[in-house]
Image 1 (spheres, rainbow, N blue to C red):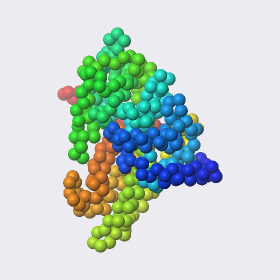
Image 2 (cartoon, rainbow, N blue to C red):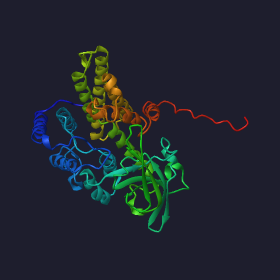
Image 3 (tube, rainbow, N blue to C red):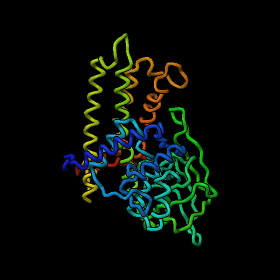
Image 4 (tube, helix red, strand yellow):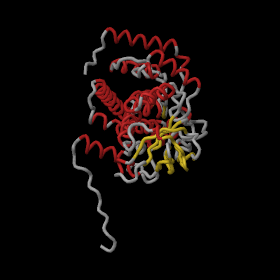
Length: 402
């Protein structure tokens, strides 16, 4: 991997910096990842696409900027947006998970219909994967799609469906072939969330907010044409999406922004008249997190390099979700510890710092260590697929009376 910045790359960096300076007041203050984007966020996304700072390598025919992949340009964009403290565009399940899946496995019609509106923030998506009792063991899902003429009739339940209340569309796994082995009878369907028979109920978590939902399907009619990939091959398509989900959860740019916010907190907050940054124990923890963040950024470049060369990043990709989610929680944990007694405040206390964002993030990110594949499952994947170690032995349940 050649990380030398050419004169062209230096000129590109200046172009990005000039753009950020000229449009600083137009950038929204929050990403809005788990909600419908605001008009300001949609306008900002449109501007970024037009200048090539979002959807950069998505073909123009599908609504993107159409640039050739360039690792260093991607790195420069991420660095400068993070340095400026400005949002790098929309990042949600539709943009970060479904769009790359459609570009890889969708039909030409699906790409033209959905990619453009999704990357512009006009269409919001949710993901129908997990079910009660079928979280880590996704292949055991029970939601069924039964043929009825040109349609499927879907019945079942999904859980932990982020954005379900705000979403226009869902990409959903359902069992279409009950007579096939678990991994071979699933199809990947896309359909509107206002289809009759869909009910969404919010789930309030320990953060005090309803970031997730449970979704029920009762005789939901979906045309057979709304399958991504081949019928019964949804497990293959789903794993392509999961690959992109883990990449979304492991965005180094988001983590670096949080780390910089933590650094500012420790520089500006005091305890007993001394800056938190001058506490050697807390400063040492900060430096350790900085080293982990640097390792994660370079691992991200390794993955980008493999992708641009058409090769498999292998182990480098497998560690992203585990590393990023644990690091995100550690960053918030240090912020809570640095705040001392202020770190345990919540809700409407007048002494909250950053409107309670650190407390909210601390609890939400603890959940993300479970979401998208638990840390334990991720470690098994790394060990078995990445390191070639033997599969984890399954416990044998003794028969009754033995």
